[in-house]
Amino acid sequence: MAPTHIEHIGIAVKNLQGSIKYYEDILGLKCYSIEEVKDQKVKTAFFLVGQTKIELLESTDPEGSIGKFIEKRGEGVHHVAFAVTNLPEQLKEVEAKGIQLIDKQPRKGAEGLNIAFLHPKSTHGVLTELCEKA
Amino acid sequence: MAPTHIEHIGIAVKNLQGSIKYYEDILGLKCYSIEEVKDQKVKTAFFLVGQTKIELLESTDPEGSIGKFIEKRGEGVHHVAFAVTNLPEQLKEVEAKGIQLIDKQPRKGAEGLNIAFLHPKSTHGVLTELCEKA
Image 1: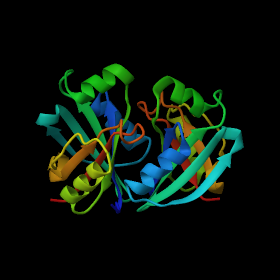
Image 2 (image 1 turned 90 degrees about the horizontal axis):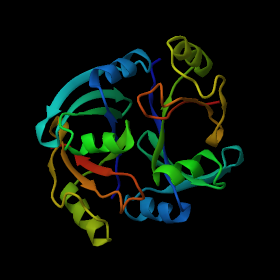
Image 3 (image 1 turned 60 degrees about the horizontal axis):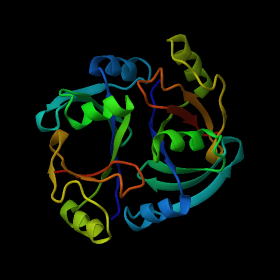
């Protein structure tokens, strides 16, 4: 695998509007998209800084993974996403090397990307997403 | 403020060598530097992916901030660093807007950068570093 860049950093927040205000007013970034991803039970907001996006994630259901994350750990970085090419092949390769996959096949994520997660038990504590443009 | 890119993502790990092996063998990144930062009580390893560095942080003292972080939360993302220009001015500006600073003045960080941290209580849960080339 040779990721080209950090595609995004996913950050769990309690209140999307309040956090958007922080990223805009304090860090000077510009929210360019708000999108609900129903099957992930989140509402997301995106900012671009250099090559990398900040993806804010607000839970829309306390039983969803972001809802549970916030309940357990509070707000903070939820995952790191690496941009790769040939995602299905990369998944096979890392699984063969003993990495535990959350998604054995790519699925659709926010912004229409093909995505798959690696389990943080296999990645030294960082919930890791691999993603590829469709 | 208008950060140009994500300068690095700081990741707390229990064992630097084991984590270097993961980032090299699984993610295909190349560790280009290992550096001890004594006043932060850490040993660091750096990888470059696109514009952004991955900075692995192994505690050298359980009483240091990384030692305490690992004790409390386990391995995982510790901080996110934004590259800015005119760091002293940015610190004044965000403090005037009510942000709690950990460092009121820039100090020296790894790789000789001038750095300062914003308190996660002010930044919606993300320990945030601003940094500038010396």
